[in-house]
Length: 229
Image (cartoon, rainbow, N blue to C red):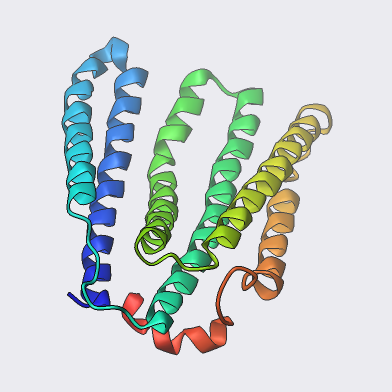
């Protein structure tokens, strides 16, 4: 099969794998949280979904999807650039979503009961699942490209992921501590400031550093990578 066909098949399998993994985690989480209310029964669908995910991954590894025709290097580069950029940006979105929820939980913890915290968390769990899905599927697509076609910038991409993860984690830990102090001592909500500052940094990063691990600039890659949407 050609590169485009192999890519689309691999992408569909990755989608299924990520969805099954997320559903497994959701059922396990609900089973643990509601174990006293009979939630233990949720372990059964979690076990079934986990088993299906495991079998799918095992089958994927046993029958690796690779193009039998040597692909055009520019096609591989276009796919790598597109999904590498998406991975970095969705990682930043994951941090934004997780810690936006954390800031609200900090506010609720000052004046609310544990039941209200749990209700808020579960009520916002779906949006968290969505952003995790997009990050995970993009990361796995880049990993598939590296495994089968070894793009030369993959090492630089992984270093970028590690750097973005560490810097974002440090920022949000410090921001959460500062937010808690202002909320507890001054009764002042500074979530707009800490979230706005992070968003500004993301915008600046996308205009200045996002192409450091890619083959070409965003403007030149869009036309050649439409089939990878």
